[in-house]
Length: 356
Image 1: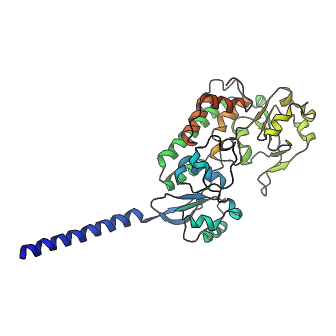
Image 2 (image 1 turned 180 degrees about the vertical axis):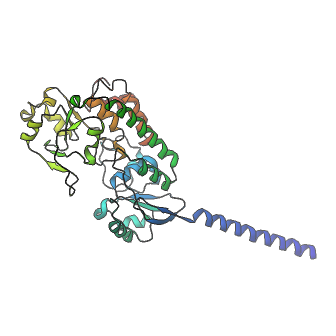
């Protein structure tokens, strides 16, 4: 009898210990941590981040590159050409809006993200206002994600929060590799030999950005001279409309555009015939699937634009750079899509480069 009581007591005690162990394990797996975001705010967040959203387009792209399986949705609707090189499971993610004013806060909150990412220039009053909208859901500010000359801190921060430091390190290594390769060549180009470059953003070709804008960083980084020398207007990030007379006066050696309509019509448009870039067939269309290589938005998506822009401006100086291999590596590792040889050739040849 006594032995039976002892055995029962042992079983009960073991059960209690097991329950306590389970509880402590559960609590430990879900216990929170505190992180300092890139606005210097101390924010409490879960130890494990499995569901996320970003209200900033550039951060959504970085999120997709580092941890696509943790994304809850896109900022805006994506068309068929944009989805051409996106796996089907990510094409179907819902559109939850973006920006401080257009994000669908109610729907985002209903999806119960572990954290949300925002990027608002370190303006803490604005950031705190966004945090109020999300309530108990941690809102983390990320800065520098559109600074193409120094975006490593932003990539590292995203990787840390997402628990994907290996992937963020891979992205940093690729970025550092192409940046160093281009910088090492660009620094040997005399100022007198640098190409004059105009960026035509829209169908008219008359919408552009001034030097110092995140949207035109690739020009200067790759050794070009932005022909538009007007100062950046802080209110609009340097966006401006220029006249045909101004472009004729600037007479760029190279034109880069994000508009297929402008690109397809510029060589037959009489207004542009006297510009050197047009006369010498030096107009190039930015690849834009799944994301723009040059800007729109400026961010980690433009890392692959570093070698592309360098070859556009100085094909002879970068003839030994394996742009095709770099493109396939970037798409496979960070866009999660394995390009065929024909697809890679089409992307590069359609941009105005030849020989791919």
